[in-house]
Image (tube, rainbow, N blue to C red; front, side, top):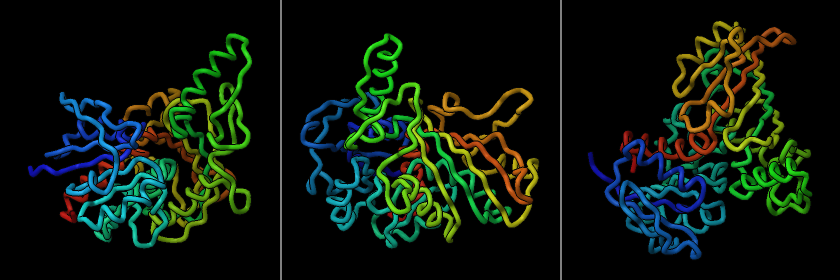
Length: 343
């Protein structure tokens, strides 16, 4: 198989490190790999497949000459470099929110809307982690019964807010158990004017508040899902940060045009790509963050008919937001692009 010149922008970050791990695990066809990050990480050694690579500073020059560039360094870096990079013939797969709602940029989950990759003009956007995990379960139900409305409640791990939030969970937990004073400084987000303890707590805010007092994360869920599914879909969401290190959970209540029984829904989900059904309530078997962490499949369980409406379902959906919710989905986009020969 032909090898490709690949760049990772943000290689030293949490998602960048996950990209490296998964590229190796899946034997992505790489002939040359360039690791890029900010000036403060320049020269940092990183091992990849038994070789030591040194991080370079991201710039127009260090990005040129590649076939594919995975961007995992935040919206500002993507806005600064992505368009210029793709004009040089590089396929940009962007993990930030910079281009997700741009009409000229496909927003892709390969198991859901792979055909949208064919529409790319140099940039393909990776959806928000919560959206990816949720839409993996929503899409097969929508295809079978046409979803009219979705009520989404998320339980999001601290690693979704970065390493500072992960450290906050560990440090605050130790301080709480040792009777020390806790001085929160990471959540709901690092630059917030006020911070709350996450240890032994939940915070009903992920990102800043916007229109109608919904948070930016909640609006991402609404708008990105509609774009991926390909039509307006009535969605309302509440996103919550919970004291879990890794893997997001989603409570999904769906109202459908066609009635589905629990058994029909389980059959549909069990045949859907990228889904693992764990649903044996008599044995207390259901998805949890501990079982989903480090895995590629989105787990679905607690499937049951909604007792309050005639045509409704409840689903419990869990996925590793650093893998399928970020790095893995981006790499799957790259793999599908190679398969479709659209570089």
